[in-house]
Length: 196
Length: 182
Image 1 (cartoon, rainbow over the protein chains, first blue to last red):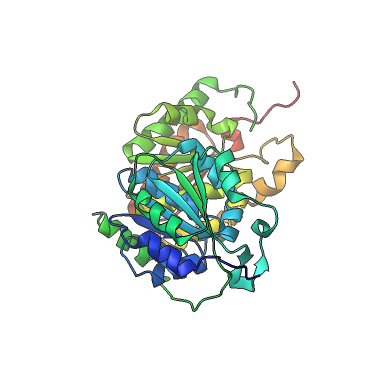
Image 2: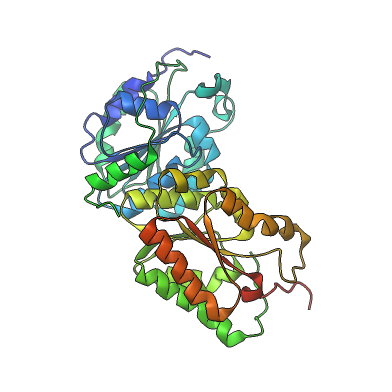
């Protein structure tokens, strides 16, 4: 399971979000949401504790509503595999402000570390590209992650898709709020929208 | 997913999709995710021609539920267009309508009822309303062209003004039974 030179997921997410500015960040169910919380709570964090397979589509809805703001989806390989069709939907809409980052540990870490399809055969970068997302990359070093981070601010040349191979370590959970109504209204408030 | 023969009351049948479009415009609906259905074809064309609405074809209906949650976070209203068979594809994602309490509206063209030819449509068509209700979604239904405007408007009001997740079922009686063999 553990391979040499795989990246630490918390370092990857912290590196991506260190200078996030006004970006809205959607975290997929499971460890990706904990990684976002570990990088620091933020009123533009869209934490998911369910809706498996829905992270990219939530990101698309936000991105189309707020085309001038960077929107970043950070999710895992299992969550992405469940919503793979949404890459075709994003490829068709081509939201220029949307970036999708998959933290790929080739396993379902929340449920006991069962191997996922990406461990053997499925190539999510290839899927994204084949769905019409032309800016795709696989990152294997922190230098690449750090060089990529400023690109998230570019709202004119997306959509982008990046896969980062991370190690399979199950880290201590850092729990965000799990009150969805609070999470969504906090984001709306940060964007200047009033409660109904 | 197939074209239907013209419904008998052709004139009335031509106007209710336009009435729905006007209501969506009036409620400032901006994002319209859909999986195509013949019963929605006229409305989908109006949406795709509209400068203020973004029609978004989906690969599966649950994508639309998630997308509308994101739209709401970003300050926009949306509506999901689908056929009754797509409702089953949405079940887990419909959780979002309860936990986010966002203004969810879906317009569902019905199959599996009112003279259906294809038995494969009947099980999901028969459970569509119950699936919504078990998922905490209010269900309204329009069966005649004359009532579409009133029913869709009531659905839009309670969805967008009261954040009450609502499904409007557009009966197969309204859209016309699909003709397979003439």
